[in-house]
Image 1 (tube, rainbow, N blue to C red):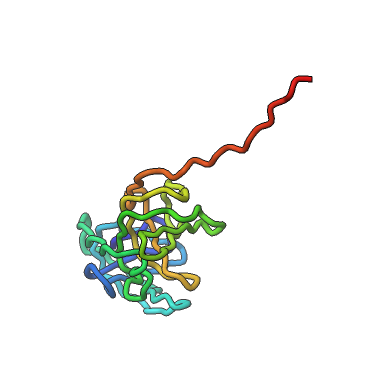
Image 2 (cartoon, helix red, strand yellow):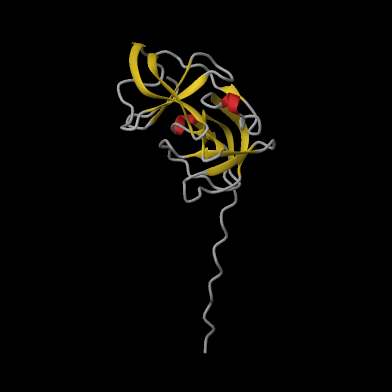
Length: 178
């Protein structure tokens, strides 16, 4: 397992690094009983859910714990918008934040090659600010609502560089003496 948080519905597993080597496991009530770095034996149903390939109805056995997960695959933000990276652990470097989180908690990044959406399925403390630079950011590439998205699985999955411009406060009126 290379990405999960206790109680979350999504966990990601891979049998190697690189394209076509990862898949999301879905559990409606949330995953518990294993952690990142655990070697797992998994059986389940392969399901195509709104164009996302996932495993459902899984039985999971922990074979060993404390293993180092495969390293993420370094990609451009444009290249990751492709089915071969769905479920794959990916990494982007030297990206700019383009948008603040929308009403769904999604925000966008770009390394100059094309836009990638960052989703908020997992918990992290960074709040995206347009103009920020991120030295590196990584996580599983997921697919939902017609778009590929990066799932950041915690604060350790990114290194924020510089902050963008601070919004200029609105002008205040100065009373004119009578």
